[in-house]
Length: 373
Image (cartoon, rainbow, N blue to C red; front, side):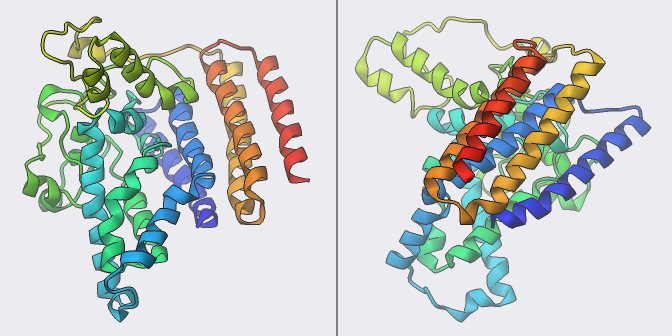
């Protein structure tokens, strides 16, 4: 499965380049270098985390399948109708996982990574979460119960995930009847928006009919403002992953009753007990329109692009050989690459110099070679 991802990566990059070129041609560029690198880095980090969390990615599903499947060897799943049903089932389960990712604070802390970008383009699609799977696997157990084989489950998930790539764009308008059935760019722009009327809407991955059935659909009407209501304000990829949990822990520490300290993790994001006055600024849509940015000279921008290309190649190589490397060695390599991604983010924020990045690269290369040789 990891090698399939390696084959898909060039296609994603080609489509990103095509969208970028089209945006310049139409004089409506939707990309910023720092934001795009940040989003793409999250996608690669999620793949590295996935390599060392296979128990949650597919292992627990496989265990459940062998333990409770009602129709474990049904020929139905081998035919075209079975594949269609498996994909639709995955999309249905994914709707509820996605919805819970917005309605439970602890799950929002994981899912918010995908929403942190204040831009909306193909690179945003690849800004994938790294920690949702630790809880998310539970939502797919109905598929195991019905007897969808683990391999088919994994491929159905890949189909639903890849489908969602193209709906992350501002260059495709409304599509008529298609918008009423399928997730589309218009529907998904609403999902990523922080406007009051768009908040927590349009969860469907491939099909928007789930949102229409369960009352979570909203049509795109006014221009969307993207991001999260508590903006990340950082290019640090590791902080992006843990910031939601840190904010929850801070909130819990401020609550006087232990019941509320526990409750805040499972209530809706932004929940406070009655009588508690939250500190900090209130959300303001106009303020959200001002996007976080840092300026880099042209030479530094080129260095950042080359550094990202190096990390992309290293991650692809890690994915390619993952099945042939012991878990301990794989864990060491993935951890080392995370340090390199952190260095790139710190460079984008101008917190460390290019020399420091190269020094970290050298250390990462040494650790990787030691682990693999």
